[in-house]
Amino acid sequence: MGTKSEGWSGWVLVLVIGVVVIIASYNTLATTIFHFHFFQNSPNHRDGINVDQYANALAIAMQFFDVQKSGKLVKNRMMISWRGDSGLEDGREENLDMSKGLYDAGDLIKFGFPMAFTATILSWAILEYGDHMKKVNELENAKDSLKWITDYLINAHPSPNLLYVQVGDPDLDHKCWERPEQMTERRPVMQVNTSHPGTDVAAETAAAMASASLVFRSTNSKYSRLLLKHSRQLFTFADSYRGSYSMSIPQVEKFYNSSGYGDELLWAAAWLYHATLDHSYLKYVTVEGNFFADWGTPTWFCWDNKLAGTQVFSSSKLSSLFGVSTVCKYDDQVLLSRVNLFGSKDIEGEENIALQLYRKTGEAVICGLLPNSSSSTSHRTQGGLIWVDQWNPLQYSIASAFLALIYSDYMVASNTRNLYCQGELYEAVDLRNFAIIQADYVLGKNPMKMSYLVGYGSKYPEYVHHRGASIPTDAKTGCSDGFKWLNSTKPNPNVALGAVVGGPFLNDTYIDSRNNTQQAEPTTYNTAAFVGLLSGLISTSSHLRSFL
Ligand SMILES: *[C@@H]1O[C@H](CO)[C@@H](O)[C@H](O)[C@H]1NC(C)=O
Ligand SMILES: *[C@@H]1O[C@H](CO)[C@@H](O)[C@H](O)[C@H]1NC(C)=O
Ligand SMILES: *[C@@H]1O[C@H](CO)[C@@H](O)[C@H](O)[C@H]1NC(C)=O
Ligand SMILES: *[C@@H]1O[C@H](CO)[C@@H](O)[C@H](O)[C@H]1NC(C)=O
Ligand SMILES: *[C@@H]1O[C@H](CO)[C@@H](O)[C@H](O)[C@H]1NC(C)=O
Ligand SMILES: *[C@@H]1O[C@H](CO)[C@@H](O)[C@H](O)[C@H]1NC(C)=O
Image (cartoon, rainbow, N blue to C red):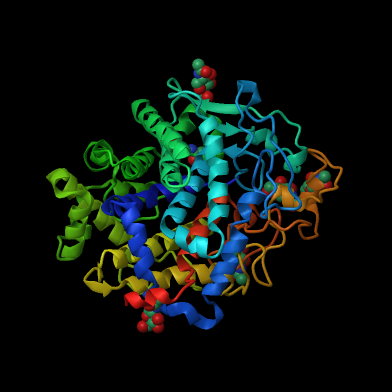
């Protein structure tokens, strides 16, 4: 179980869309980034942590998807010895095969909303940094894990206006402490439909499928087209029948409450635009849907922080916060290259203005992340980690770093020399350095001198809140007597390789206790974003230096 994911993604998407929309062609861009971004790898030698370690960490992180897999497992080199088949009957009551997919966290529920988000982030990571993954033999693993999710999502969408968004009853599940291989409780499926819509979850699923369709386009074009078909249908469903899934299915409220769906609509439309180059999706992002865009001050918008939400919505603040373009200058080249990429005749005035607003918001987000900028956020630990909430804090730090890294590579790819933060000048390498600080913190360069990536380094959490990892494979316990494994004072018998736990308190400390769900529970989306971050930080070759 995890919470607050929606708050983060909602906030982030403004930036993400800005970034995604501005740069039009992934094929062009990915190539360009790959060719250009290595020269700024100056931190290869930063205090003992170097790029090889990012590659080692990536190999570990990638295995968490295998730890979380439901269904009939396929023997491959990633196979986790203590995992077996599970959830084989999932979906059967609706005559569907929903056996695949990933368990969300330390419990045994397949929550569609964060699972789709995990897939979208993983797709994005592959699209940007698949070449890096390939060099260290992780690309196929990443694509396999992504497909394990999208296979599930396809089956969960049996007709245009029907999407199954959950398998398992979390209230029932949380009354048990058992291995997935041994669960016997009924696993109901939950749906959204036209009378009980779920715009947020349907749109996020559309985003996952559109992004994954790009991933599989060259290697499995039939599958890619299938994903795109589902994605388009889901977007139409999401947009035509508007409503939050947590209103339609109140039970999810205490697990993955959605604070709104406008962000997912824009996010999905942005991905669909990339996947189809269909102008109507761009128009949605820039004109029809801009009502949802929340252009404004970058803030840590969480579902429990109405103030922050209000600020973002307050258009009257736009002008004073951003000032006019003397504050956030545009690099002519980016404007030109953007128009160039989009095709100038296609971009209308109104769309252009919207794109600029996205970009301004995105820049302001990044300026807030840079530790030395005058608009730097105070949501940071003394150890330098972005820290927003005591519930799963690392999701914010890692996602911030992933975005900053991507943004820095976009700057390089588009020959954008500078980012202006209230008149101060920053370069791509400053963004990259910020990303490195976050990654290094997670990997052990922190006051606790411990790694928050399970299995990495000599000291990492041993009491991860994770049912499967905490129970010996030969245990005879069932649903309720299994709690003795939660209560056990011994470290987990199985290592949840690649788990990125919730992370430290604001004071940089961590309590390694299995019952400490806020800090000790991992999630698939933590790992997905970390996979993206690590992949971006890998430099496996020096021949690209010739592009200097
Ligand atoms: C629509 O979804 C709701 C919420 O999941 C469910 O209660 C209802 O039975 C569904 N409607 C139909 C016709 O299946
Ligand atoms: C869930 O989100 C909605 C919309 O923001 C909000 O009204 C509701 O209070 C939230 N519920 C919980 C349990 O946080
Ligand atoms: C921030 O500024 C301090 C003091 O000038 C400097 O030592 C440090 O390297 C800077 N940090 C980053 C990430 O640029
Ligand atoms: C686990 O600990 C809780 C709280 O101390 C206790 O109520 C429960 O009976 C224990 N369960 C088992 C199976 O040991
Ligand atoms: C774990 O935490 C839950 C909820 O805070 C509590 O009910 C339970 O007794 C705790 N178990 C142990 C063994 O501390
Ligand atoms: C750190 O913060 C946590 C949570 O606020 C608190 O329980 C703990 O005592 C603090 N530790 C130190 C060393 O200050």
